[in-house]
Amino acid sequence: MASLRVIKKDIDYLVSEVISDCWTFLYINQENKAEDAVAIINDAVEFRDELFSRVNKPDKENVKAHYKAINRDLLTGVDAFFKRISDLIEK
Image (cartoon, rainbow, N blue to C red):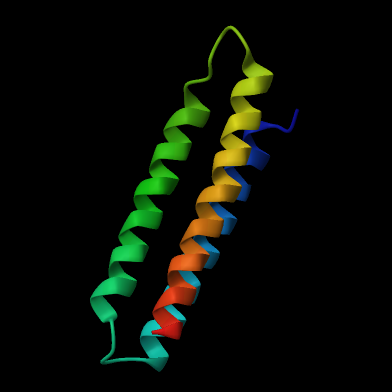
């Protein structure tokens, strides 16, 4: 099992990539869909906080499965955010 520090760094890195892509979108498309990009940023920050809360309060019964679920949720959540950003670009 990876250390909590590594898990938290992975969460920070992936969510910061989502936020960075949103800022790039805002920079390039200043008048178009700014409120949608800001909504994605706010949702990403809430997602990060929720994952950190789960990391800090592990399930005492099955710790390994708990952290695997967090990792799975991180990857699926970040993928969903990138799809939302792609949808903004395509519209």
